[in-house]
Length: 435
Image (tube, rainbow, N blue to C red; front, side, top):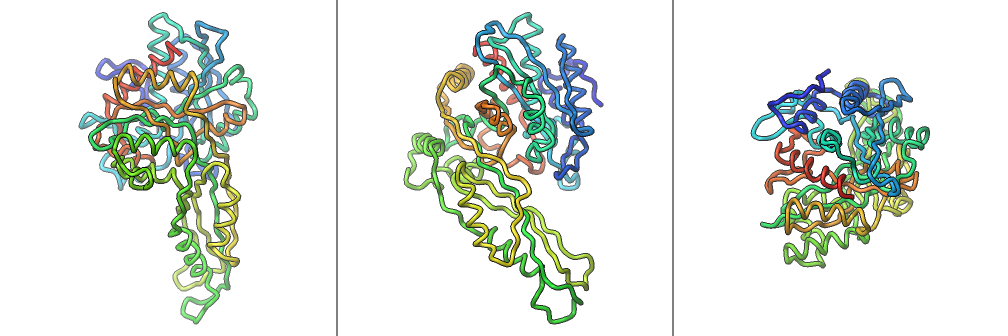
C-alpha cells in the first residue's frame, strides 16, 4: 500500500490522488469486489496524521467506510457533509494506453482508474481539510467527512448500510457535497461550470427469456437467445422522448444564453456543449442501455434461458411509468426482474450553500457563469437523502475546452489535469473556510 508520507515532487492533492489510484479497489458489482479496506486505511492514516481520530465501519468483510467529524468555528450552524467513494469500476488493462492502476503522470495529467470517478475528489477533500488544519485554522462550520464503499454498485454494501446503521455519523447535518458537479464545460468559445442539483433515478433490470433446450443444428423456433436478442434490441434502440424538469429547464436556459441557440430544440442546445453533449442529453430523457448478456454453455447446444442486464436511468418521479413502458417494449414473453432500484433527486438551485458554491467559483474564475444540471447517473447522495440531507455535486475542476471529461467516467484512459486538481483543492478549501 502506498505510504501517505509527503513527497516534495508533487503537490499534496496530486500525490494523494495518485496514491489512491494505485490502490486497486475494483468493484465488479453483485457483491464481487476487491474491497476498499486498503484505501480506507490510507485515508485513515492521512486523517490521523492531521491529529484526527477517524472511525471505521465494515459491515461486510473488506467493504470499509471511514468517517471523521471536524469541529468548526460556528457550532450553531448545521454541519456540512463532504463525502466520496473509494471504489472504482473495473478496468481492462489491455484497452488502456497506461497501467490503469499505475497512477502515471504524463502530459500534465494524472492517469488511472478513479482519476475522474472519484479519487480526484477524494484527494481534494483530504487535502483541503489538511490545508485548513495544518494552518491552525478551523472550517466555518462542523465538517462531517465520510468515505464510502460500494458506490459503483448502488451503495448497497456501502452508503446504504452506513445510513441505516450509523445515522449518528450525520447528526446535525442538513446538506452534503460530493462528486460530478462543479466542473467546467465549453459552450462554443465560452466556459461555464455545471453545478449538480439532482440525479436521475436508478433501476438496474435483468431481462430473462426462456425457451426449449436442443441441438444447435435443428430447426428451433423456441430459441431463448433469439427472444432475448429481439427484446434487447427493441429496448436499446428506443428513442425516449424529452421530458424537462425545473433543473433541466434552467440548464437549457443557461446553454441558450451562452450559445444563442434555439430554446425549442433541447438536443441542439446540449450539442453546443461539445464533448459534454452526450452527458447532458442523457439528462433530458429516460435512458435504457443494455450492459450485459449471458446465455449458453456450448456452441452446438441451444440454451433454455438467456439473460440481459439493462441500466435504466429515469427522471425523478417517472419510475412507474418507465417500467410499464419497458415491459410493453420487451413483450409478454420476457421476464423483467428489478435487481436494484433507487430514488431520483432534485433540489432547488437556490439557498445559502448554492450561493456559496457559485460565489467561490466566481472568486477563483471571475466572470464565468454557473449553470445547474440534473446528473444522468447517481451518487451516495441518494442514501443520505433518506436521512433528510440535501445533496449537491461540487467537485470543482477548471478543465481544458477540448478534454472529453464526462466521456471518461467509466471509460478508457481516464485522466485529470494536474492544474485542475490544484484548482479544485483551492476552491474547495475556500468554500470550507467561508461557508
